[in-house]
Image (cartoon, rainbow, N blue to C red; front, top):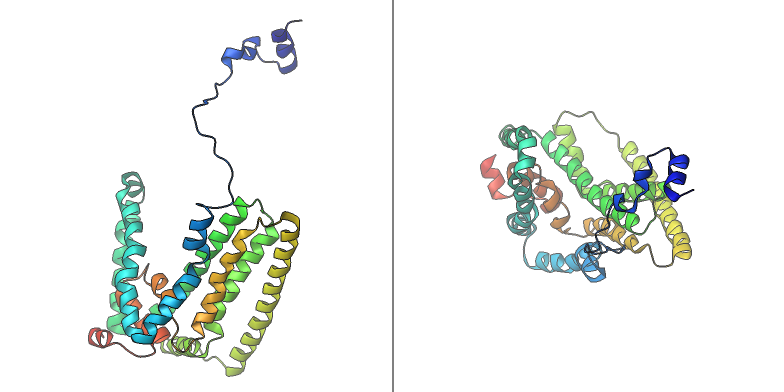
Length: 297
């Protein structure tokens, strides 16, 4: 029996499908992409993604030792936001196909958010500040979580337990930067009351803090145990663990006398205009109103 007849009897397909010239050709001219555990390469990943907090913190502290917090906020808002938001706008609005599919969203969303921000400054709506803070924390922790999952996929560590630990670690440390710091927490509670929120008892806040510290310790310990276990099984493959320094350094930075503003400034104003972010920066970071805000209000 020839090969074509055997192929037809075993598969039920025509014998012509077996002919070699009917098989899909492999393009040998295409470059072979080898798997890598880095997004770019080790040097650029460490400099631009993993060790960024270690590189930025000394610069921020140096600026804050010379300038006031309000001046530093202005610098970050004026120059940092240009590099943070402008490329995103170019990518979103410059893609004709993307703009055609999301035209209504791209046109109406800035108008609606801008109107809300202007109205919040004019009428003194404190709820906008609360929304800004929640979005800032969520936006920052989810970006860090996203990078953690990218490195997990590249290092072939798709465990569901790892995914939960990454998420809990980011939520615990980023939220703890506000919850466990007296000044920003007090200011947030004051804005909560100004927005018409119900009274929060002091014992309740103290209890939440104790539970948060206990949970944060357990999550961090579980994360360290998991890293040690996988390091023993996979060697040095889980390089992305150092990205968790972003969450840890947020907590450390928020507990300094004048916390660096770059942790909140680039994240709070992405979806809100400067009208809403100015009071947010001042109440959480500078601790004092800026003349521009007083004039606008």
